Image (cartoon, rainbow, N blue to C red):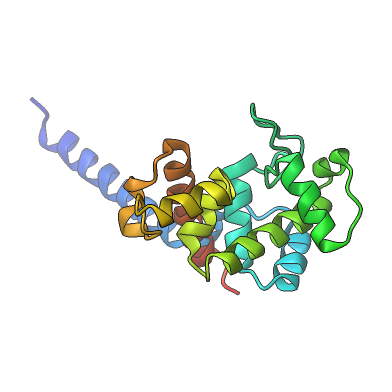
Length: 187
């Protein structure tokens, strides 16, 4: 059995730990260690260019590649925003810019094309962010089919109805990180 001195010491240690934890939780710079904002200039420039919230773009990048320039998925998506080469080629053609698959590993190029593509999806899905994010991950054709067939209504409340687990997880994680980035990095 612990004596009164030991109990008092444990009380104070616990109290100090709680106070320190509360202070750290309240300090944005602490959380910015876990939610960094690399490539900030490029993200801000291209977000502005395509009328996107930069916090959304950085959330997509964090979820897609964890900020690794050379990230490559097993399915072949490349770079920071994990663009499929065929999608990036099509987007580059639509934008009227040169395309080379190797450029997908260039941060500024990848962010440029990725921002254009995300803005294009948001336009196609009339500003419906969950639907646009699902299309970013699963392909616009799949999402159009889900919506047309009533499999999913495109709402966050029915996210569990998205047929692909990877896409459900992607949409949920991006929206979570988007909320965190929006709280930590005010516009």
